Length: 513
Image (cartoon, rainbow, N blue to C red; front, side, top):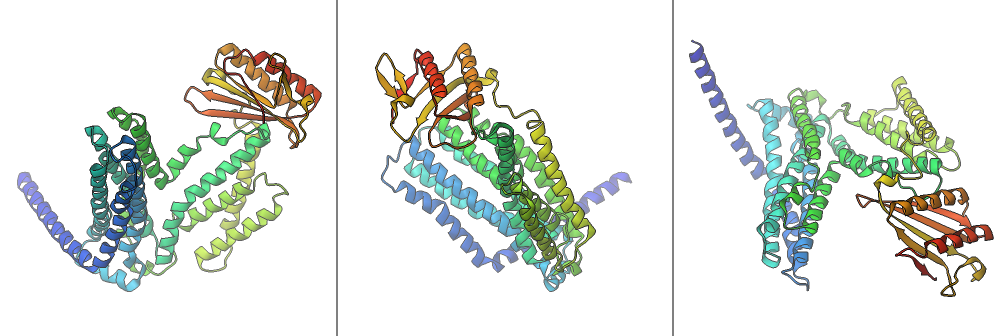
């Protein structure tokens, strides 16, 4: 009996799949016939962006069969594919689910003899077809142009652009799923455009605000000595974790770098990009697809043409933008009272727009107060703990490969008394530089930095000695420390003595303006 039931269940399941596939084919035929003009326009735009542009690039006077030409041709084709794919993955979900934003069309589509979950899949798949088919055709046309004009000596070399497109397709699928979720959560077209657009722009606003905030905090801790926030905080990693377009272009740049470094090894492409990013964004994409599907099935017709009330809509956007504005005004010269009032007004204007009415709730005031208190509290904690113990003026020499020293004398008048004198060559120098690599000399150079730190002045002087110490780490990253010393006899004697001690170094150079 159980076997009979199981076979009957499988029979009905197969029949249901056949019905769904037939419905999908019918829907796709209807979709293509209804959107012929739009599809032709998409194809033409992508054609101009990808194969046509690549063809014109190779038509310029250059050596057509060189590795450099193939490499730069891939840059042009890959960048155009990323741009076209990102734009389409943003627009298509809004366009395909636009019937959700009108009550009449909402009721019409939901009254079709198609299950809601299948209708969601039909819209989702039709968008993917419009995304991938024109993109793939035009990418392959551009690729054929590259093979026709470019370097064709190695199979791996020629396969890298195709492998890149596979990775790009996966990332675009994830981004398309994210925008599909956001489009389904919105209740009108204006909100859908604004919410999806905000999720594109917000990560970049967050990165800029965070960079300014941490730059100001580090300057407060160490002074204005040229320290970059990237030394202590991986801003590039944060940007990739927040922004899908940044991840897509990071994948392109990593592939380009692997292609440029060594075109003969497959492991360079495998290691070109941190594949954990694919896993991270893949999980987000799966969750967005699932919750988008669920939200679509549970939608009510009366939600159409109403304001969007989803937590992932205006509440998140307003909170993040307000937080970024607060970060912008931290440590601002002239006080924070006036900027804070401006932020408060902007915050409530965004609240009023999202609610479509002027109404102040206790929750709005509490959220704004918590944002301000939390940001100022973290700022105080960060400066008092010297960046939670991470912000250090003197880098660890264990990570350093070599140190560069550069000393310049900036004076208004040509005064030999303040210049550096080489007694052997009997010449005066406006500055000198050298590179140190051995451990003992690097420790000496760090002692020089400590001395320069004590003599450093915050105010800008037209006449000054500028001392720049560059730490080059094992991973080839650079860390800068810049100090300004007054032009006086004491500082001049110290820097003159330092020059005399460093003249024996192999890479010592004295120079004149």
